[in-house]
View 1 (cartoon, helix red, strand yellow):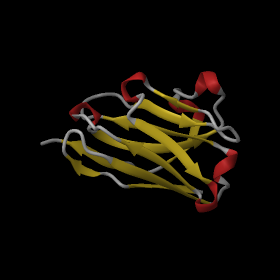
View 2 (cartoon, rainbow, N blue to C red):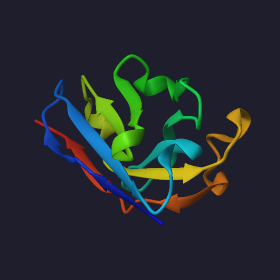
View 3 (spheres, rainbow, N blue to C red):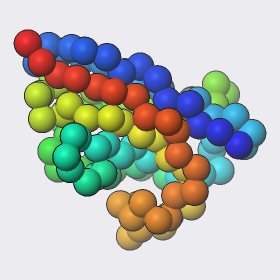
Length: 124
């Protein structure tokens, strides 16, 4: 059972990146998939969630309207499309799987498989 995160890089402010989170060893659609991020010197924070079996997506306020989470179950891959990136989005981004109910999606302890992280740097 594994998650592989990829797609990070260096981008200028206002640019875009798409992160991918590829699953192996389990059925992606059976789990809640979330993205978290950790900036240097700060605690890891929740960014976005797409729940298992549901079409609803959830976002932290700072990324609403700019980021879009999605899932392609046939490819066993979840995505985080990030548009209009800002320097404050600079962080290592992690994907995670769990079975969190709605009230728990921001709680790291509800996730039991994590990807290795991919660095996103927004800078001119």
